[in-house]
Length: 284
Image (cartoon, rainbow, N blue to C red; front, top):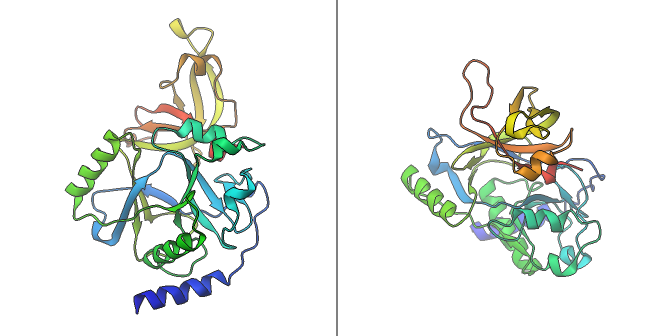
């Protein structure tokens, strides 16, 4: 009965042909909050957080999180459905830089793209809950039948101890962390607790608004980036840069990722914030 219902919902869903997004228009994505221990874990499915580039298939074209067209080879998306897919362009653990290099090319390198996979984890236009969307996605991926279009595995964990044990194992294997999807949730293009991320440290994104000169051993180089959060909070990133990045820092207006350990209770500024990398999927 459940399989019949899932097939029925999928059939209805595939009849909804979406309007393609214009180039440069950010796709309507669900964004994750940070996992907290008070979260009712029994309500969630868990998957690995892949360290690739967020990708969005709008039914006609493949886009980055920022809305830029991904110039994939025609064979890569041939036979994909006329309905949105949310996922991650990914090569392997620890291969983020190589993934970005391949995806950002205006003229696709066929051999390089053979290494990439689109790891789908959601169906944004599907009207059902995540449990139902996950079942429908499994059928869809099986029907397309391409080795480079795969579904991200989702599973249950018994309790917080098992969750933390899984996190430690993933990180030891050079993975980034975990994602948690609430099984009963609908797809909402906003940041909410229906989608959570769990990593060994906290991270976020901010826009570069100033370059601050270095002193002492960093004289003549970058001392720190002044950045602005999406909420308009300004603070500095003074650590985490290589020598090459201090000589040639991320340009003004570019979005970067940073890691931190909690927030200052009075100011809300991230504590011990360190530069991680440029967010190539959020920049033109």
